[in-house]
Length: 264
Image (cartoon, rainbow, N blue to C red):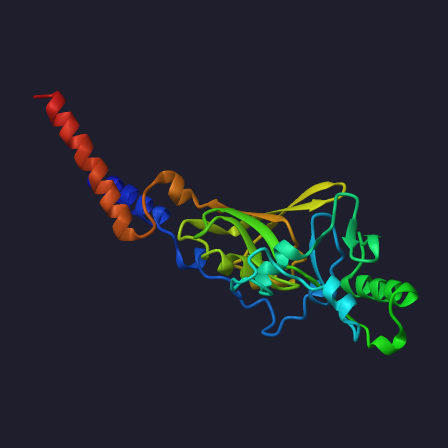
């Protein structure tokens, strides 16, 4: 009769110590969500520039002198990085703490809170006012010079990473950083986002398909993403049944050996 409670206790410990399939699969549909989700509002909402953002600005005209002023180059003139997307981060235009960028010819220009299209229009207007004519075939492009983010915790490649695109989701950031480990808590991924008035904290459940409708599904420049560990890591019992059994056997063997040595 005494063996039954011990067996049940062992079985419960075994089951509670394993990482289940539901803990590992992203964007699961429990049947309550439609098979087709509406487009996330953030996807259609233009990003508004903040401090510490890096912008890639290119100006093309028939005037080679104006073109030369806005030509992006990197310090490695002969390397493969020249004119590459990665090089844009180092040769782009940084938005300072006051929300300004400094441009050739134009000088200091406020861009805080503006969309990329609004910045492009403002640059075009300033150049047309004083430096180029309508016949110059002025063409201006303004893009984000990569999205910088920090990711830490139970992730394959923690640290500072970049995504060279105007928009990116948290799934992009995770894939770009080596994926969440087996012991990472996909149900409670933390996002710390900076604003002029302070830092806001969010939690997103990446095992639920409704996460795609969350305002936090799209990351922003300078986001800090933290992946919490599952309780199985704290217990140290393993992620699979075999690992758990091995751990338990090792502990029991150690305790038995210690007990026998003490009572010799």
